[in-house]
Image (tube, rainbow, N blue to C red):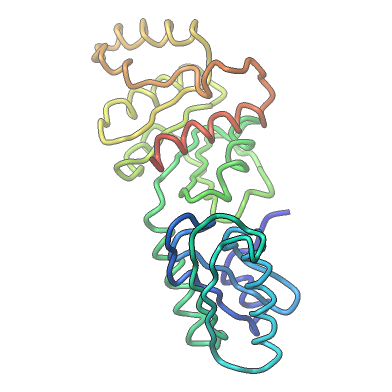
Length: 265
């Protein structure tokens, strides 16, 4: 089941409390700025789980029941709460009204605009599995497909572009983003890869395949007059070599880890 967006959650649960990590010192479950929203019977987001989060949820629901507008907790993360991180977290609790809800939605939208772009070229089995794996992560994910497919159930925030010329979509990737190439057609893969590798401002260019496909692409690139040094930036095969499992969800998990290492480091 796809998690709702923040606006959808607030529309369904208008009476809620924002729990904000106002300050984090030392070793803590989440950084300052992390937040969650607590309603009487539902939660959105997390401040790191564990006893700290249980305390926060209980305090927020007490605030809801009391009608008070705000509160705070200064929590040492030691043996006394059964969470031995060793740091200290100050939590701010704010009962949300229409205005503060909009402020929170705007804040989240601003965070999301800074997420790195990941363009997935191909909505086949691996493309869809990778979209599902990446959808909940702090990335802006776009699925690009030429065929008239109907991939239902895309995660919230994953965009679907149906286009006739997918290689032209490479220009839409913001600097620092990634192109992951997994189409149904090797010739199309090669066209997209050449466009992506021509952009040194992309942090990651990967193509599904094998050592044989890499060698074939190298020969094709040479015939097309491409710069051989481009190959140094191409990740092929994607997902590393630790596992040889070819099931789409497994490939997706490996590639997701590979992308996070590059894009969020």
